[in-house]
Image (cartoon, rainbow, N blue to C red):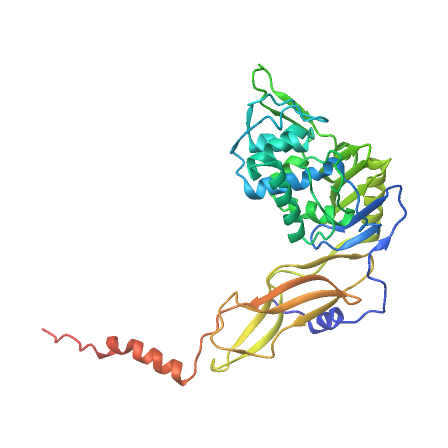
Length: 379
């Protein structure tokens, strides 16, 4: 098992001089904005990020998330009377038309189909009203403290609101789903069109997919009441971010500027790798054995450039046998000015059996039937 050089370990535990670790307040043309680290959820840049505002069709990020969590992609979803002819953007579903849930999701996220939103809501929740209650409850579970969903599509409705930060948390959870990531990063797709001899062609309204390097999605939204709203994300040099601008006249340009700022001021750093040995612990009742305390995953985070977070370990002084390989021993954290940027389990690198007198006696008794068998006489 690889061991860390003492000098390097000491350097990693060095406590650096104080420096502000909180998110930086930025000037912006948006009424509200936020940039978060996708991996940790840490806020990097913000402006009025906790102000409740309408969010137009960015609502559909939660609609898609709940559909992926509660439905099956191959489920047939039928356009009922409530979905048929919903005003605003549409994929022009016919009354009674059926598509798979996956096809509906493409129509929802690329073309921003309001009819698809209602069809999905009724499929998952029975009614759009029940689905919206489910959306709001799920948002609460994700830590969204000021979000209320009253429609599955985001058309103007008094009381339907979120915050930039809450919406970023919802998008972060949605991006953990491979299907969601695939859909929102798709620039153009085709799905069936019932009664026609050609398919629907869906073009993603998110222009960043074509204009900004590393864009990963996610969703546009616009109503006169909400203004131009955008949830967006990008990845560069191992750093993945998610951003939100609400009521932003220059939505794509401002999103690009904010992401440029985040990538200029922050970077992804990895101080220790999966399997690195942080310490060797004595194991009592093992006959003098030891166990290696190793990282279960890379110790990596997004931090301000030129910053070196401190490594903090939470480990016992010793263990008691038996210890099983992979057993959690404690935790390693990257900490910058009192803020935990990353936490990773520390696990046992090998199995250490018990080797005291009772354990030996148990093994002896277990083997006794074999030892007691008399050898067959030689013929």
